[in-house]
Length: 445
Ligand code: COA
Image (cartoon, rainbow, N blue to C red; front, side, top):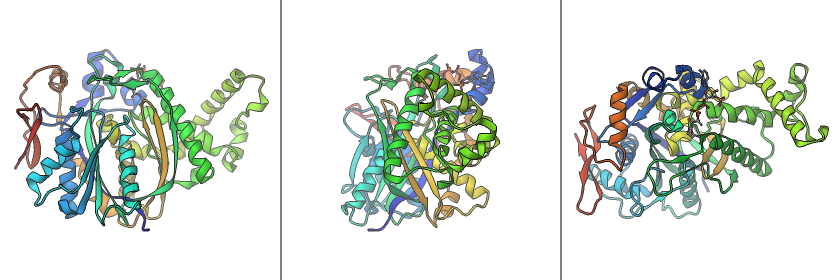
């Protein structure tokens, strides 16, 4: 059986931009540094009034199929991962296929379509489903398209309002992929949690501080599970570690704990010992509290070392380049982190073929999944074909008052009709409602 993995990717950002430091922070009475330094976010993307999870997903798929000269017959599966669906029965993949059939010859009538739900980890789960379908030999030589598409909106004045975003990532999963192959080894950390949920409501109920703790706990479990099958991780094992990125500050916390874990019992721990001592071991302490305090103190010291800073700058920081400018894309977040890392490598002229990356996904509710990927020879051409920098630069810069209108325009409970801020061109747009309450779409030349 040949290797299976991600063959191609495409990204589509919502066309509007909210500048968090310049526009949002002053209205909230916040220091802009809370966003730029604390959360690590500069801007969020929002959909214009004619955009939604279907248009963003379909536009990403169209570019992906055109760049790779694919026809509907080449695709045997379309899975959409989203936590912003507007339909409890009809999957978003059917709407997206319907859009694509407006512009491509042929149809997707023989493609299996579905929708995956588990908060932000669902995109990774959909890739898993595609991988398993191909490895099972059921694909008849065809590829799968996985679309992670979300409009991450929080209720106005919820603390999560600082971490919104909107966009889609389309990924082609195939045999002998050009971008990355996926490891068989995986680790899971999964538990029944109520950190973030949407019980039949559009905007999430969030316990933000708790969600940060749950992310870290489930991620730790997943890493330990991975190590139980793949052996202990070492920082030299991977070049980048893209994490699920609700906001870069979250990844900063996770990366520090991960580094502490993967340097334990290594030469790095020994080499750092003169400066900050060895990592505390439980058996050296009388009780959990004293142990936990010692671990916290060690972690703080570790964060201040040049060795950790150099690892973070090389391995984690590049994966945050896109996220900083677009905010949280829920299911797409970890996938733009992977792309951001590879984009940085391309811009530095680095040869990534054969290198490993360690991918850490997370979804509230809650589940973390980790695995590694091996970069393939066609990676540089694939990444060079993306136009995400131009898309990000071209977004319309919202005033705060315009942001309020955009938020209301995408609030399903409100019936608002606003003028668009940008003019659609060569893309799918929302075109009103049909007789059964379905959303309709058309292609604009
Ligand atoms: N300069 C530098 N840093 C600053 C700052 C300033 N002036 N003001 C605040 N900060 C830092 C805080 O110290 C904090 O960092 P820390 O956690 O490392 O200490 C960070 O900025 C955020 O500030 P905080 O006061 O905690 O923000 P908040 O109460 O508004 O909530 C979240 C932050 C993440 C809980 C909130 O945005 C949220 O609920 N988000 C949605 C849920 C989510 O994304 N969860 C993640 C897991 S999926």
